[in-house]
Image (cartoon, rainbow, N blue to C red; front, side, top):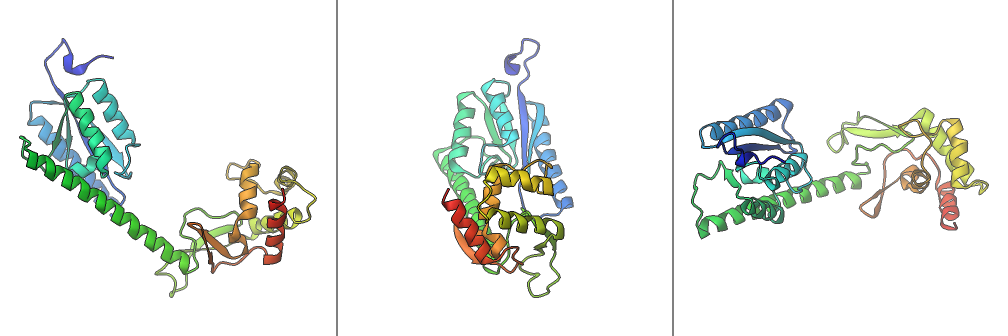
Length: 284
């Protein structure tokens, strides 16, 4: 691959701007404003520098805790191929909120002679104190990420304890509707209620499997003919059918983080039928 920084056609040194939009409660307008501000600031700084802007790379609504980002993967490839001389970011946490990942990126940049320019840090000459401060800032960013994760976990657990499923994934046989209960609306804006057509199929699935006359492949074939199928309109894989038959949600319970909670939704099968199905599955 052609090495841009060593091009024989010119002596230009190329830089890229990197921006990342994180998941927040910002509205669409605020999100676009954040993107515009980051992009404009980085590109302006590059134009006023010794570098030539190669491109602006963006990651939208992705966590800064992982390197498994499309934009970061592209940057790593450019660095390893010696195609850029500098990377501009608005702040170091745009690049990564994980200390070990940030250290990996910095070492990679150093190895390939790529300069990381943090626009929040105007000090170009790094002393031992500056490096230490960088590491402290990175550690604080990681602390904030973990704190946010803990708050989200606590909030989700609170929703579960209140009897609601805190997930956008709707179990087959139910549908999501807006919560009209003024008392529980502050806890969850949407609730799950039985889907009249699909709920019948779920009940029949449990009832027929409880007879012990069918294995999972046979029950899949039978229920597929009756209309039980996945979002792709195809027959459910056996693993999904087993998961469905084992899901305590259908008996009014919620399984969350390895624990079982009482749910406020309407069960589709009674406890005796559910337990009978579990006995059959466990005997296989």
